[in-house]
Image (cartoon, rainbow over all chains, first blue to last red; front, side, top):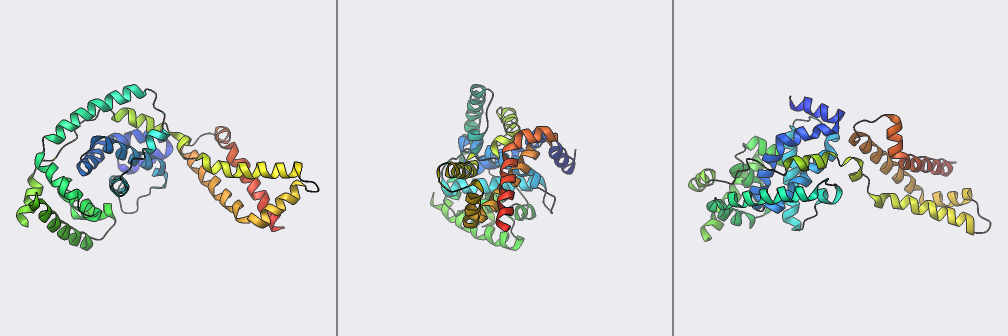
Length: 185
Length: 129
């Protein structure tokens, strides 16, 4: 199924959103986890990102960007809001009724254990993340998308809705700042 | 600088291969339906105004519902336009999130919005007269 077909099927029947969820939840969650380095915050941010996407998907139309880029854009905005406010607001967990909350919490517990073990396997990354978090958000987002997610400049520019020239200059300045911060550790 | 860039590319990063909570979360989000789109705070405003109008009509001597409506619209005409925008937007969201339902099902879910829309339009007509 192509993205356009998937979008049409969601517009006809919102329950088909779960197909989109299956396709993109893990990569988006991974992106958020690699930016925050915290499992619980990543669950909050990722679930809010998808909840916002679900509420606004009827407004989405192909204007040069794919659904994947659109989801990364929403997730990036949510992560940036998290870094600016440093407070959790859990839109999903306030608005949505879970049929079996205990079962959900137990699955979250298992995932948390697994992800925390995974995070601690990458010491060097965790040290770089500490330095990255001390930089301004505009540098955090470009460096994370380029070097943690391995995205091409064109896609990063689309996600952040900036031109490639601005992106290159942000990457160059951000990288220099990050290098200096890392050398202090 | 190039060395540092290579170091960033080559260093290992945490990966997410599977998440057990994924299916339950997807299920919960797609079942959110209209619950999440209509904030009760928006609904309190028209309710308050309708209650105030009714009370004023009943308890204030020498006033009628029409004169009170007229007074309201001459002071607060923009409120009607705001209500119309809010309710049309909410109904549009409900229509989508309910999976394009049949007209009767849709009206059952949105009767309150329809009522406020009719009242708002009525107030606007009286105001423009």
